[in-house]
Image (cartoon, rainbow, N blue to C red; front, side, top):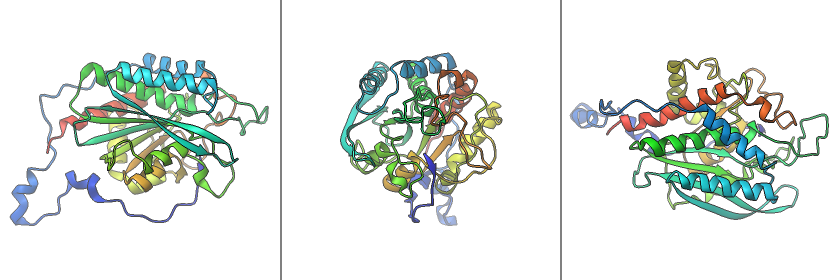
Length: 335
């Protein structure tokens, strides 16, 4: 991912906001009030996110080796993620597609999609890329060689896998979809064409797993496991999903995680959420470790130092518990 010049303005349909509408005249006041979201006292509190479990999910991915498209490690990891989600009782499917990267190489895309409570029309989308960048081009040493890529990809996937496990155990009444998208990190650095990145997300956004798929909002987890990580409010998230940003950051503050979810606004970056906002018309938030002032990612970004040594269970806990409770709260809201 990298900074990018904002894409052309486009209009999100108001579907994600329909449950929050307060624009009505006095004659419709009573009717509108029946649509205001209210708490249901019968809903239990959210389960505890298990950071040890999430850590093991991160390590399992890294242990396959760099998940570079077209390699045995990539194939084995895709099988692992598919089977793990299936074991939790989710409806799982593999989305394949022929993709050509900026350097002319062709790959068989593997997007892994899982659904929970698919009969529930009100959906939340959780997503993270699972592939590895083929080279550590931000490193001064061996920049052309692959690297473990523990934070960039596996940390977000690990957090979402633990959320999937918890939802299977507790069976909340909420509709969730998971997208583990492929070929996110095979982009061309220092190139004006930002669309060389996020190829799996671009493919899914234009070819959703269900025709006409819609979600209230999406949450992207990208580099969410490093020690000392900070997650400012990213620019595109602020512009197109400000109410979701507020929901997440307020939840984190309530849980005592404001040292991670900092109340600072950052610039816009190219990441998977951009394409899902633009092409799938779903408001999305990008939770990504970056410096709000400089826009720089961690020192381990696209470097050999992105290995298990940077992964901190406390960071995984902060992100995982926050998102788990945001998702859990969706069932506390009735129309």
